[in-house]
Amino acid sequence: MQSLSKAGKILWTGFCINLAIGILYAWSVFKKSLVIDYGWSNADATLPYTVAIVVFAAALLVAGILQDKMGPRKVLILGTSLVGLGMILSGLVASPLALVLTFGVVVGTGIGFGYACLSPAAMKWFHPSRKGFVNGVITAGFGLGAVYLAPLTSQLIETLGIQYSFMVLGAAVIIIAVPLACTINNPPEGYQPEAPKNESLATANSIKPKDITWKAMLKTPQFYFMWIMFAFASSAGLMVIGNITSIALTQANISDSAYLVGIVAIFNCLGRMGGGILSDKIGGIKTLMVAFVLQGANMMMFASYSTEITLIIGAVAAGVGYGILLSVFPSLTAEFYGLKNYGTNYGVVYTAWGISGFIGPVIAAFAVDTSGSYTLAYSASAVMVGIALALALITKPVGATRPEIEQEVALA
Image (cartoon, rainbow, N blue to C red):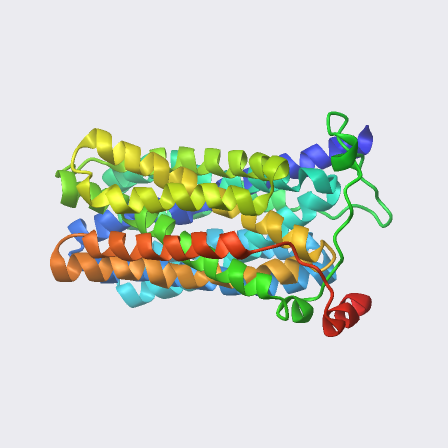
């Protein structure tokens, strides 16, 4: 019972840390103020967010390697500290380039270091049959951050201005997230999590996947299918998340639309939790297909959303579809390639999410700056999600049958 209690504490502490460092998904509020109050172009106001996404993904890869070698605690403390420090530094600057360095590089690095450690640690405390549920809860905290951060940031900007808002949020991260990070650790050597009592015998006794190194992973076609699916589908979600308030202003002339960020965040959270649980029941690939169909249909319809109610529907669909991705891809990585090298392996897979930070937001900024609408971005996103769906139809579980892969597995 003690070990189960410890597992629960790790899971919900990870959720709370992600809740504190999920500032990335409130960028839409900052962006709107930078454009209106500072007169920045959409491209300039998007750049710190875009760089943060790319740096986040790169830092997650580095952090994954480090936490596989030295455990999660030290890396997590460094990451949460960098998020807070980067936000405070962002409050001391007022140019696009400087904000790229403080928010894009420092905060992006901190988020990557923090995010990388939470799912690997939590999954090691739970039975493999619960990996979808665990990833759903952990990643839900990150997406749910925008539920309170969007209205809080909007109120802070209105009261204190953009710069002080950055500083207040940064100080809060240091006060809340850093102490929580000190409590995260891996289970002791030889720890065996109990199978859930309500699971079927077949699920409870599921075969443990082989532990495959990142080099062996790169020799499997499943990795490349996953990478493209992740990059293309995530770009659609990130495009909406990063621009929802601007989309509301452009398509429906709604100026006070911070609540849409909260709606996206709530259903992003529900998508992560629901997607994780669903993947435990029907499998990761089938769950991804559900997400791709939902995303594709939403992108094809988004240009016609010109009222408050249709924008809310679009925000709900975007949140759910994107949220599913962020819980299923980590589970799928563990399912295909094992937990021993999971930090490194998922860090490599997660570079796809970093590339999506260029694809979605940059296409959106280009579309609106050149044509005054987001129609081109919606069309491009729909095509990419369609490609992801096609790849999902041909992706099968990894079978380490090639001799070079078997050799890598033996050395893992």
